[in-house]
Image (cartoon, rainbow, N blue to C red; front, side, top):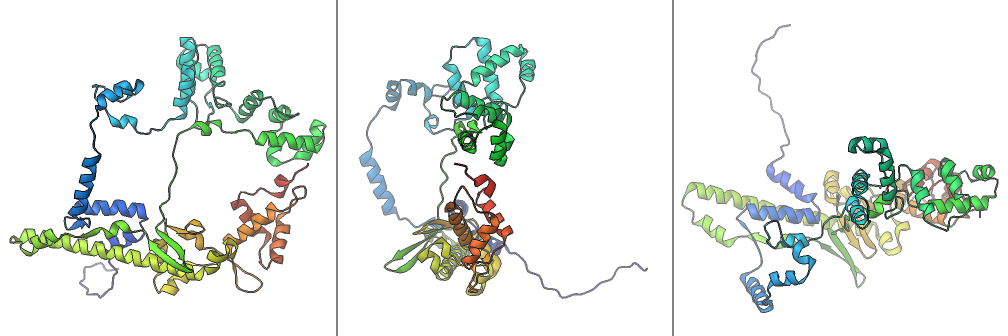
Length: 459
């Protein structure tokens, strides 16, 4: 085999991702909140961009602010507020408003507050505080008492005593070393436990998880109704007490990217991009570009102008794409908006792409992570893209609507004789939906509906 160097000329074609194209793709897949943050950053970096508000609005807001101002000695105010005066000062004694903002209170902090209200010996309080620090997020202690005693160099009996103190804190069940102990702590703190509850928790939790009520009734020598009542009581206890007293994560808010309204029988589409409409080219910097003398200044301003123009064009393209996709969904899923979830039609990305004559990847980027606000509620765009199930009439049914029908069938069944997956499949087939037992089982698991054995009631 001969190895040598040669010169060749070839003609090839390549698809290059220019920075402008990359920016347009990024803008298309940004949700409303992230788009606002991105435009804020672009506004700070590009002098050619400015906000559309005029000076008159700023002067009016300044006048309103001046009219509402009043004299108040804040330092004297905080001193008169008692404990608030101490909280509002940093280590140098200066007032800091940051200390008044809402903070996250952890499980350990809440339990420490309860410990401080107890009159405990110093050594016992120290051990109890250490146990609290070693609790997991769900409130369990996974560290052995002997290991805690070795780390703190104390007697194991003192650790056991401190653990008993921790287990008296709220919520009940905190400090348990396993699920069985957690449930027993809650049962012992209440006086309404039905018969056989303690026996089942101590020795037969595995049978409870499997729903083996007949086996439990035979072991305990009682009837099915009493066992059912005891299991219902156990399932009403809290298996993870720490989660009810954990961090205050706050509410999760969704800002819809598009809103559709029914006005006098006609659908109106509103794209939530009000922030982008406030961006415009700066007239002062455009004038500076026209009068620029130095080549470097002119090149810099020209580049910024081109970048701003492309950004505004990409924003408008994003708005147009979202509007067209929403318009297609409104027309395609008209039965959903008029009659409900059970009438949702199966739809694919390919259907939208072919209807709008755009690429599937464009549709995928446009709907990713975005939400649509409708008179029926707020839905993710992906909610409208459901798999197709064959029907007798050949129209097809969306998997989302089939799940809704499945949930209604289970809700209306006789709990003493719950339907099996095969019976549910047969019921759906009677409604014209061709579905197998395995698909029913898959949808049931997605809806967190237990099997027929666990749904069976004996009373």
